[in-house]
Image 1 (spheres, one colour):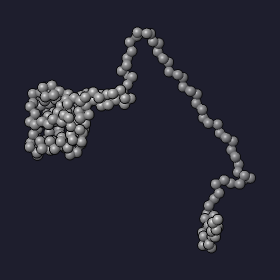
Image 2 (cartoon, rainbow, N blue to C red):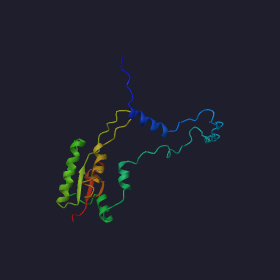
Image 3 (cartoon, rainbow, N blue to C red):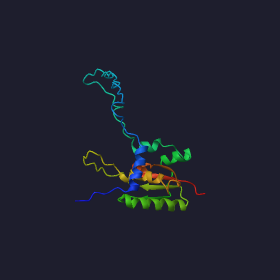
Image 4 (cartoon, rainbow, N blue to C red):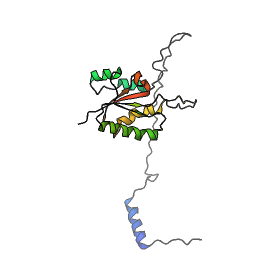
Length: 195
């Protein structure tokens, strides 16, 4: 059995100071005046929303049923044009010829990212303005899991890499390529002019 610890005179004096400076959390019952408990504010429930009448076979507007993100192509078309409008129009029609290209087919994300970074840095250093980045359209790997797998991982990742450092400052515009250069499976990357 453990011996009880004795309190020293210093500890006792310190404790007395603490006791003098503190106030009890509750007053003694004789001095405490209890207020009647207040009833909580209860609001009447809102009237249920009326459901419009519906007949079997009636057409339904499903436009507000979901809020899915727009497709990657739609997002890129909605992005503001940073380059010259006339050159952009020629680019979209496939009239401009890429000065260099890289094919990322079959690469993993870990292999593709440094390959893309090196390619864009070398292209900018060589003074190229338009390069082609081939990602492929991707494989449909959806195996029925509750969380769908992304279609074309590289296709989705490359535009993000091109907007981040160290490439973001070199890239002026990214857009899907014309069908003659790969369509949805490739990107035109228009680089800033070297200064």
